[in-house]
Amino acid sequence: MDSLSGFTVFIQVAETRSFVTAGRALGVSASAVGKRVARLEERLGVRLFHRSTRSITLTAEGTLFLARSRRVLAEIEAAEQELSHSAGAPRGKLRVSLPLVSSLVLPVLADFMRDHPAIALDLDFSDRLVDVIEEGFDAVVRTGELADSRLSARRLGEFSQLLVASPDYLAHHGTPQSLADLAAHACLHYRYPATGKVEAWPLLPMADGSECRPPVSMVCNNLETRLCFALRGRGIALLPDFSVREALAAGRLRRVLAEHLRPHSIGLGVLWPSGRHPSPKLRAFIDYLGTHLTMAPDVSCMGIQSFPVH
Image 1 (cartoon, rainbow, N blue to C red):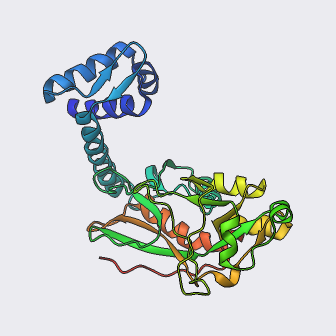
Image 2: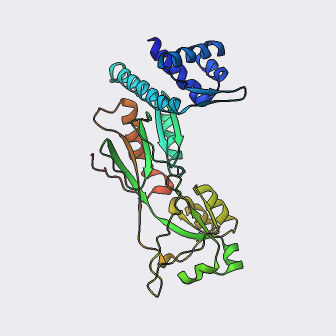
Image 3: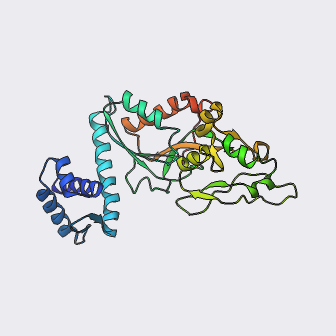
C-alpha cells in the first residue's frame, strides 16, 4: 500500500508541478511530499523530476512513469467501482481526452456534470494522437476515422466544413466566384498538431482540371483563432458547420464557393479500452453522449450509430 501511496503522491506532483500545491491537495506538508518522492526515486533507481529553485519538471523516465502510474490507479479505481458500486450510482474520477475542436461537446459535458455530480471529470484537451491505454484515459472523444484494435468505439455523429468570410471582408476584397479567384484572397488555414501538415481544403478540381492551392495567409492549430479572424474580416476560413451556424444565421459570416466544395463529412466518436466491462461511470458517460449530443441545437442533424468493435 505504501507503493500505491507513492503513485498517488507522484501523480499529484507531476500534475501540479509543485510540492507545496501537491501537499495541500493531499493534506500533508511539502516536506512530506518531497520525502515520499525521494523514496520512490530511490526505490526505482531513477530521477523522476528535474528540480530547480523555480520549477519542477518531469524527466523522460518520469514522463513514462506518469503514464504507467495513471494506468495503474485507473485499473484499481475501476476494480473498486465494479466491486463497490456496480449496483449503485456511477461515481469516481473520469479521465477523458477531447480534441481542441470541443465546442461541439462542451455543453453536453456541462450537463453531464450536472446530472452526475458523483463523477469528477478530468478533461484533457489535445489534438495529438493519445494512447488511451498507456496514458490511463477512461475514454477519448475524437474526430475522423476511429479505428484501433485495442479499443471499442461508438460513433456519435458527423459534421461537414464550410468556407466562410465576413461581409466586411467580402465588401473590401470581393466575393470569389471561382476557385481561381482564391489566389487573390487571404486564406486562413489549420495545421495538424501531430504532423505539422497544413489541412487541405476539400475543393473540387478547377475548371482546367488542376488542383487548387489556396494561398496561406495565416496558419494555426486551433478552431477559435480561425473563427475569430474570419469574424474580424481577416480572410476566408474553412470551419466546421457547427462552429459557424450562429454567425451565419446572424449574418456575421457568409458562405463562399459552396458549389466548389466536395461532398464530405467528418465523423465524431468516443473510444475506450476494449476487453473489459465498462465501469458504471464510463458506461454512463458513453450513453449520455450518445443520447444527448444529437439533442444539442448545433448538432441536431447528427445521427447515432455504433462503430464496429475491433
